[in-house]
Amino acid sequence: MIEIIAVLIISLLLVIKSADIFVDNLVEIGLALGISEIILGVTASAVGTSLPEFGSAMIAILTGNPEMGISVAIGASIWNIAGILGISTIFAGLIVAKKDDIKRDGVMALLTALVLIVFMLLLGELTFLLGIILIIMYLAYFWILIRAQKKDRAINGMSVPHEHKKPITKKKIIYVLIGLAGLAVGCRIIVYSTVELAEILNIPAALAGILLAFGTTAPEFFTVLTSARKGLSRLAVGTVLGSNIFNILIGLGIPALFIAIPVETITSNLDGPALVLISILLLLLLKKDMKLTRISGIILLASYVVYIGVRLFVNG
Image (cartoon, rainbow, N blue to C red; front, side):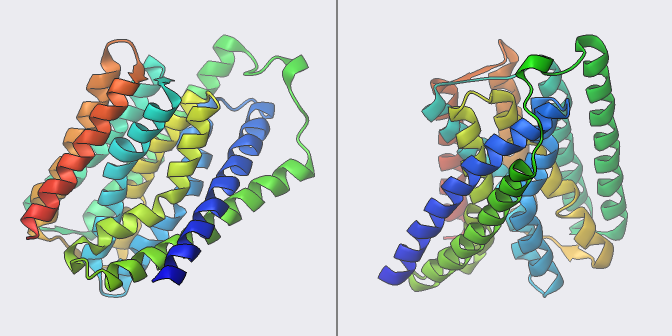
């Protein structure tokens, strides 16, 4: 057990450093290409950091553990908002969002959760039809992002003044890949260590998927925390919302094309509604002035504690 904890700590340090390298170089490359911070967050950063959830969900579902796959996707999405964004806000002190970003990405994240829960409650499983719907939704969302980027360029011109731009070098591209590779490797070790600890501590199997989500969201956690600490609020919020959208629409949409995924009652009656409610809570906290303060972060984190408490109680 001591060895596993030591490996877990080392892997966490690897992920922290990898996130720092990934964020710094991704932002420089993106801004040099005229891509806005928010678009970087909801696409490249969100997808890159969500690969562990996607891979874990795919493997779990296609190898006969569909309940765990769904729990990874939904559990990770709940933790992204209530845990990761909550903790990052507490440490950063203030995260500022833009109204247009939240109207687009926040509403899309909520709509994604609503579509998922409706299908889970009505059908009791994720079907091929739902997989098609989810993937079409993601393609439509991506098209909206492209239009938003073009509109932003038309209104504001280049995203970064020419004199402030830094040229894209092979070194920066290599560092982005190194950072992403470090996130992936470190995360895999975290997942392995977390699962091993769960077995040693005899944690109930019903919570395995949610527990695994802690490990798979390590890249998001450190990427968002690093972004918030560096004052890149739009990147931080964009990474969380973009990751949630990707987790559900692609993380569950693609596996549903290959196999009908049964849904446990607790998932449709508790986990799904919890994701919807926490998504609404985030939008309400941002509604007044598009700012998340430390109080907001505490509220988000407290909502996660309540959710986990209820989940543990239901599982006995």
